[in-house]
Length: 136
View 1 (cartoon, rainbow, N blue to C red):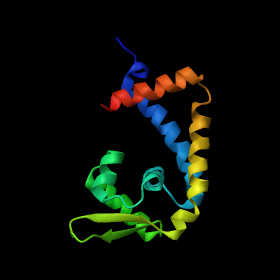
View 2 (spheres, rainbow, N blue to C red):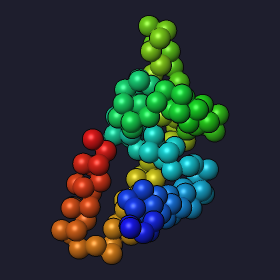
View 3 (tube, one colour):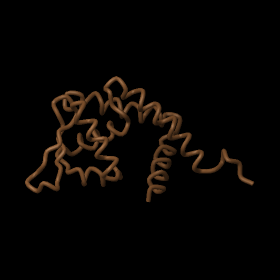
């Protein structure tokens, strides 16, 4: 019989908890959750995305993304603008978000390196590829 400690859901959930906790503590000074940090990261890469496009890129359903964006708008990180077609919500970064851009990107890159530092370069690439393959 397989031990619960060898069940993939257990292994992945414990790894997720560790990584999430590290990201959460690093983003706490900004008043951001890890998910809000990912939303910012996606918007830093391409500002002005529609809510639908942002949801696709982050693999989030509209209800989850809506709640995240509502809290980000309330805390001054994003602006939600309705385009000509009232069904399309356009997301823009505020001056606050833009002023923290370099710091948040650097913190995220440092965190990635910190978390992956226990692995060789080959192992890092393999781990990332395998995790991406699991998402499919």
